[in-house]
Image (tube, rainbow, N blue to C red; front, top):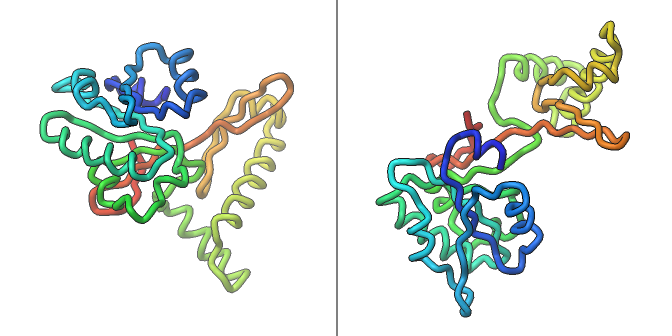
Length: 211
């Protein structure tokens, strides 16, 4: 949500009536976001949605729907509206409903669906070097678990070696390695990693990192 706001886009939330927690969270924290509605039959109010879109501006449609048939219908509506408006679909996460066979991947790619991820997909020279060295030692290429294990261990060791120590380093410095980034936040004594990447499905059916 913060990233969408930073992109100076118009954000419209299409949230299922059953997803009250998500809707309440958006209302409480992002009052500028517009909310579309569903009628008594559970169908999206297309006229209202269209009135909430802005010509000449990027429109991020944030969707959270539990029924595959509704997701399919909404994506078709958004693709049709793309003839008039600059629309990009966004989701909080790649939830199970999006994986149903009845939802064509090309629909999500056509809308360049944005989603958060804890790992990146962009290959870097450092990643190639790591993979080569890992295979030389282990006779197998590293999977995602191996890369994450390396990133976590390497990050911890480097922070311990800093003059200010691990804790201060974790409070002030964001780092990034093979596939993972680390941006620690402390809340009531609990330290969590808030670093993430914003990825999207491109029209060539590949996953790319949003700029």
